[in-house]
Image: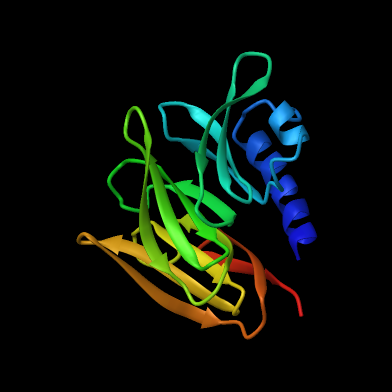
Length: 193
C-alpha cells in the first residue's frame, strides 16, 4: 500500500505545484537523500505569509520554500507517531490556514505557526490509522471540513463549530480506502482489496 501511496503523493505533488503556479523542480536536500524516511504526502499552504510546500514523513513535517531559483528546506516539526497524510486549510473558518496530519495510530492533529514557533492540538482520534485526508468546502453545508479515510474502511467528516470538533462517519466502505479527493461537491475514493 505504501508504494501506491508514494506514487499518488508524487503525482499529487506535481499537480499541486503546477496548478498553483509555483515552479516545479525536484527538491534535493542532503537530509532527504541520506534517508530521513519516506515522504508519504505533501501539500501547499500559506501558513507563514507565503506559499510553501509541506511534506510528512515517518516522524517529521518538513517545510520547503522557493528562493528564486531553487527549493530549500527551511523548517521541520517532529511527530510523536508516524504521519501518513497532510492537508492544509481554514477548517476553523477563522481566516487562518493550518496543517492537518493523519497519523498511523488514528490521531488527526492540527499544527499552526504562532509567529515564532509551531504548536499542535489534537483534533480527534479515529478507529484506525489515517490513510489520507483532505480539507475541502462545499461538499456539505458551507463549513470547511476535513475528510479522512482510515484503514478500517471508514470515511469521516470532521468539522469545527462553536469551539468544538465534531466527527461523523460519512460512509463505511467495507474495504481499506487509500486515497480521497473532492471536486464538484463530490468525494472520490481510491481503494484496494
